[in-house]
Image: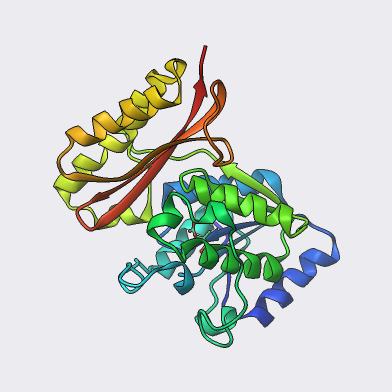
Length: 283
Ligand code: PAF
């Protein structure tokens, strides 16, 4: 198995990608915060289908964590991450330090305003989150200059906002969403699942059951789908609901009929978990 090349600085990244750029190889970027798992492996697999060269970035981005969130305890495991990348056939792992991304320090330079939809749903509970995400993603796009960037549908609001970022800032990058990878009991695979104890882990499986319950009511419309999901979540006492929402595919008001999205956010103990599923509303 070929090991991917681990690069830590912007200069080394440029030097490494220069050869690929010279022969106009297509480059796909999979931005991550590390603690890689089966969900990331699937993003990497899709990226390999799309481009000759796959770059995975690993950077725990401080500006997307709010005060009191889990920045300090966020899992960091570079050696294991590089091994997963090697197994997935990744060409370059870019793992910069904070200074390379935020030369003046996190939160001190120019940042991207995610617009009104960045203040809904996740943004209502985490007001600075999406500005941090869009700012770091813009920097990673500028550094790597990929033709394709691959993100998971699990962070659905993030995916919608990054797609809009590329469109609104006229970036020549195709943003590709990849369906969520799930454990056998339906729980969406996430780095934050590592925080759950055994009881929390069992309780957390209710999120995906709630989505299935919502989908079972989709023909009856958005309210019925949302209510069915909420009812199931309310039955699980270890789970605190933050929101249950039905929107259109791009986070606008839910339509009467047609494609929509059911999104849920909860706390299981101290761990915030989100999930979502596609709906097809009406008859
Ligand atoms: O989804 C994530 O892991 C992060 O939000 C991202 C897109 C890598 C930006 O830090």
